[in-house]
Image 1: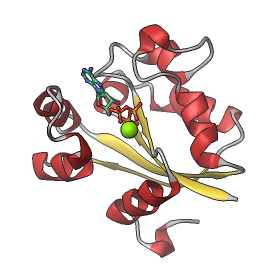
Image 2: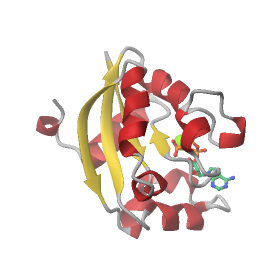
Image 3: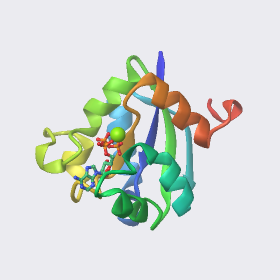
Image 4: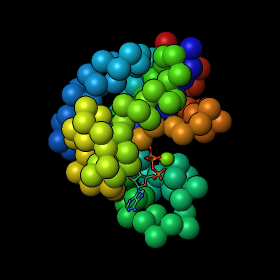
Length: 137
Ligand code: ATP
Ligand code: MG
C-alpha cells in the first residue's frame, strides 16, 4: 500500500466540482485518507513548485495556485502514485485520455484541476508539507 499527495487546484474549488473529482479518485480505487481545504500563500505555492522556478510559466503557475482555495489530500492504494497519475491524465488536457480527470474537467494546461506526486520521494516531502502523521487516517 502506497500513499501519494494530491491537490484539487483553484479551478476545481472555483467551479465547485471537488466532489466530482473525488468521485473519479474513489472510483479508481484510491482512498482519501487525509483532506483539507487551504488557501495557499504565494510563498507556499513557490515552495511547492520550486522545481519549476526556471520555467517560463512559473510566475503564472504560482499566481494561479494562490488565487483561490485548494483541497490538499493524501491518497492511499496499491501503486497509488502511478495509479493517480493515470487517473489524472496528461498535463495538457488536450492530450488527456477519455475518462481521466483532466480530460473531463481541466480548462487548459495551467488550470488543469489536479496535482499528483511524481515519485515516492516527492510524495513524502509533499505530504509532510501539509499534513502531520496523526491527520492521516
Ligand atoms: P502537477 O505537478 O501539477 O501534478 P504535472 O506533473 O502533470 O502536474 P509538471 O510538468 O510537473 O506537470 O508541471 C506542473 C504544473 O505546471 C502543471 O500541472 C501545470 O499546471 C503547469 N504547467 C506545466 N507546463 C505548463 C505550460 N507549458 N504552460 C503553463 N503551465 C504549465
Ligand atoms: Mg509535476
